[in-house]
Length: 347
Image 1 (cartoon, rainbow, N blue to C red):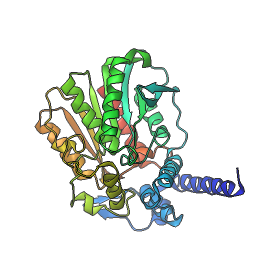
Image 2: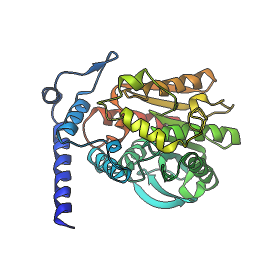
Image 3: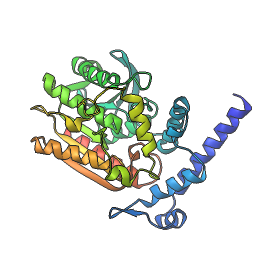
């Protein structure tokens, strides 16, 4: 390791320690450090989240979208490492999921076969991988008692639409066909993801219903559902709350090729004709998230189609809270609530 890399590593450790320490302080102290409460649309941003955003600005930690894509991908990994911490889980093993790399998280003390979730990570179809969501998957598996099989689908711009969609559907078909090899109960399979992964989970659930594949549940965490969306929460929270308009513009420009219809239901499930037999869903949104409105619109669409759906808005959270399981209190509590819903759905 060069001296430059040693300095960078030391700086990263210092930032992580500062963040952990600040978000462990009593709430009144955090409030003094964070500043005046931020209130938008009748919601108050969680104090620990506001403080984390302020520390990010002080540390001059720039958004991934402001960097060349390879550097942005490394930045996403840094952010995830800082907020994810080291989460315990019963066992982890790597395995191929068809042509894709996969990682299986097995909770402590579970029966075999047992309920299993195919997890599709977020990152705007451009960023994210098995490592960026490792802590979140560990937390979700251990807290829910559900096996989590994460897959590393192809990313844009190297592999634009429909690559990620095709990979996600292929991965779910693989899980159905190979359930026994991962200790999965075919009657208790689920698909889920966050952000872009939430979109992929929704579209995979639609295809599963069309093909008659067994699927018991879909877990959609602040899913992107409409590539044509504008105004509303997209405008209200476009800057200052981690996910920015520039990030979303880059994601769309990288993933959606010229000439593709942004209303293609494989891109924007809000425009899909929903088939019969669609699995029950839990849709989690964040109050301070540009994608809030379209996620909630998709929950309403599911309900209008007769699908059993529960919508839960976490009003004090930002986009990305799913990855915040190792620091602070409010995001971790929200994720514990999501894990409890997964556990109950597949019990």
